[in-house]
Length: 207
Image 1 (spheres, rainbow, N blue to C red):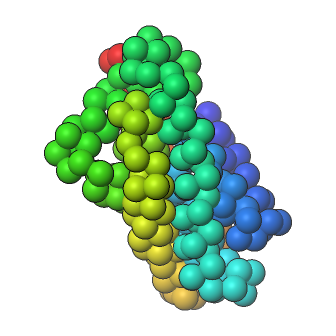
Image 2 (tube, rainbow, N blue to C red; image 1 turned 90 degrees about the vertical axis):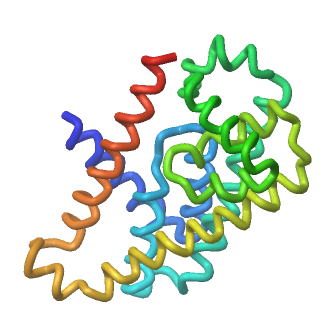
């Protein structure tokens, strides 16, 4: 059942990027930044693979559009936190896939690193998705928050797109292990997806 769901998820990611190119990357990354479990660990490596087969221009386009998508998706999350406040999300957060533990983890980073937490957290799996809400709740300076969000997301995007490129460049080697390169992508994304969803659902249950 889980494999089927993840297969559909990966298929959706592949379809969007294949049909809409760089704008598809932005759309998917924006969805992830809106607290929806669509992991960038599945989105960006596939973009890197498409670069190796000339379906996307280069790593810079993919990374920049990925970072822009993160910023766009962070806008509604920021303002939900800004206007909703902490009490609202502690009470109703589970209905929008945000657990109390998600907020607490993000709070710890903000308390420890201040504004730079917004930069650092954009390079951390899972927590990167939810840092916008505490930023809004704490009424972080908008210009600083969105600038650091873009820079942190840009680095994250470059790294994951590069991983996809290296996988694509080693297609012939991988082909001897997997009959189809898509299988390598699906297996990798399935593992990352299971970890991501497991941790997130666990946090919701503990709320």
